[in-house]
Image (cartoon, rainbow, N blue to C red; front, top):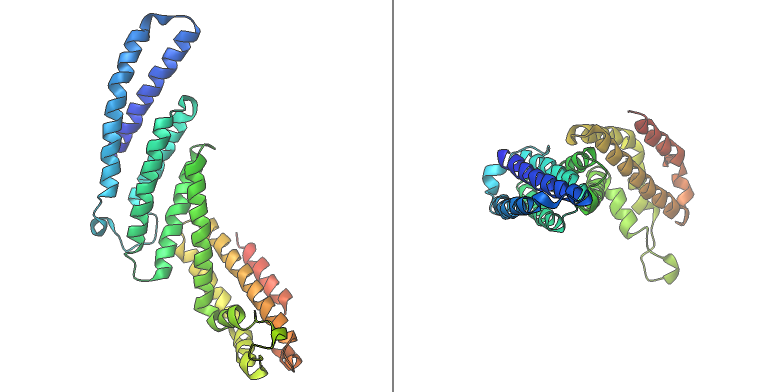
Length: 288
């Protein structure tokens, strides 16, 4: 951590030197140009050396030593986020392209480290939760430092979005696997082609009755999972709403499929109304 502060301090000195030189130039006071040039020449090579040392420490990190059996944000990633936010903030007026390039190299090393740490978890679901918590924390720190996160912030936002989609599918499969598998395979078939096996009442009835008997209890379990898995409560609730919305889409497709099945109207008494599912979604949307 002290090393990170040392790099930030060095860059701050370099930026101060540059801005001082710029101000003096505008005021036509060139007497310190030679001195300030020497200061910059002394600072930047040292900055690059120390920065590369930190970069290499991430690339060569011992994953087993760093890994903790905990899905909350990792302390190394928090240090990286704060370090990056500080340099981005300092570089707003300076606009150093080399620093941006070095931060991109550092970001790539952190990406690799995070994936390796996530792979230490035995369950795929825990791997995804770990990544989401770290991406969300990094984005929050970058936003707190100002609106200048740029490409780095956008990169983590995209990773957060992708892993949220993965987690939503994992969560739904955990509770509604038969429904989802049916919708993704059988419900998407086109009966007009005549090449698929017709969907029968016997095939679809168990799925409809199973959903009707436990959908509210399953949603409550999903809610508990979301609020206990994610460090950021608001992030967890956003993910829960995304999961419930996706569940609604799956069930709507199931209902539409039933309408095309011969004798499908006999299952109407067991179907959960779309409005009932939407009510549950709104109810959980109001929990904060």
